[in-house]
Image (cartoon, rainbow, N blue to C red; front, side, top):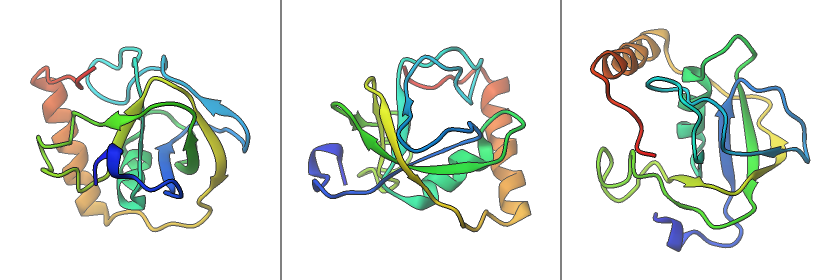
Length: 137
């Protein structure tokens, strides 16, 4: 489902290691979790819990993995890093915005991926980093 097709009552998630609270805003400008970890011009989120779980598991840092329920405060677009490139039709329902995301809750209980599955994904991310592949900004 593309950004333009999201219903008004859609639920969105953001996986991270940042320790934030309900009512706080998350904004672009923080270091990306991928590539050279340069400050990102966009903030990313998803309408699927599965994508948010991957984001939390792959997030850089030492903090606890968290998945926040978020509300976009402005216009958002399909994530070009995934949409029609890796997953035609945006099946991951991944989006990005240059406006803040408001935290409206946290998913307190969720199941992470199998350790072997996670190891393979971490190796893929590292391989992309070594190859100089950067996120589309």
